[in-house]
Length: 161
Image (cartoon, rainbow, N blue to C red):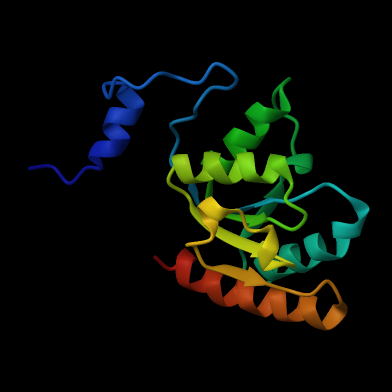
């Protein structure tokens, strides 16, 4: 008996009878063991949050990317899907109930990635995700430092698995 991931085999071979998305192609590659993707609103107000997340990941020796770091495909959604597929962990900031981030959370969950939810307000976590743990943070310097430490703790656990 072979030690294989049956889901991955069925997924890659399309034997499961599932329809394929029409908006983007699903990559079948294995995630990089040291890559963390960050999904968050692209707004200047989130720049300090992005810097805290990026610092936490980089200080631990892992690679950290956001969709605006890459331009490999004509369609941005393809770059986003491929970034999620290449990443072992996907950090998603639900602050502000950004529809794009919710969409990306769904893609990450569908691809079986480890997802770390963060938010400035628990009220921004939609009903379908409320059963999952999240890291809540304040947008000030002390809150961002705590976010960085909390994320580091979670990433250390996930990246060692």
